[in-house]
Image (tube, rainbow, N blue to C red; front, side, top):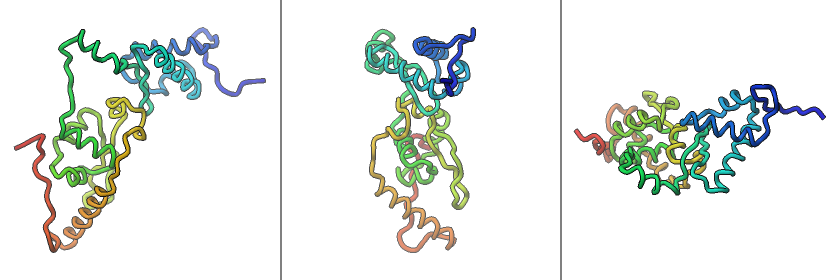
Length: 224
């Protein structure tokens, strides 16, 4: 019976078996050092998406079964070879001092709000945190952890932010569905109340009647 799915073919025109496919993918990812798009692996090896996923499954299971020092990290449309987190203390002991660029508490809080509420505007993040987030947002954009994903259909059409594949890679998760579940019902009500107050202010041309809106304080990350 004729096969309908494309079969991987090496450079000399012969079929590539699974073991060789695993080895080729491993070699490409090792030499690259960085994240590689799945579609680029398919193109380089002449694989279908299904064949590539089978190959990645085989490579990943081999690393996990033998608890090898390397592991396969999948995030979004990318894959990358990384070291196994369990062995990090031994690596750090040899390579001390290890230079780490950790995210500050303020930046982490801002990133958490964006990750769970995306797409979200900077003003909405500030309303949740109660502080200005200009520095934190700029820092996250420069690190490639968040990006502009559109404009909100509201007064001034503010920028909407969302996380990137680099965010998934940074936290070693494959998709946003792996984030811990958190109940944001209270924050949603807070945002809705703030949006209603802002709309009333825009319509009336001044502050709405009653208690004035609480303005975010200066960003603790970038004091003036």
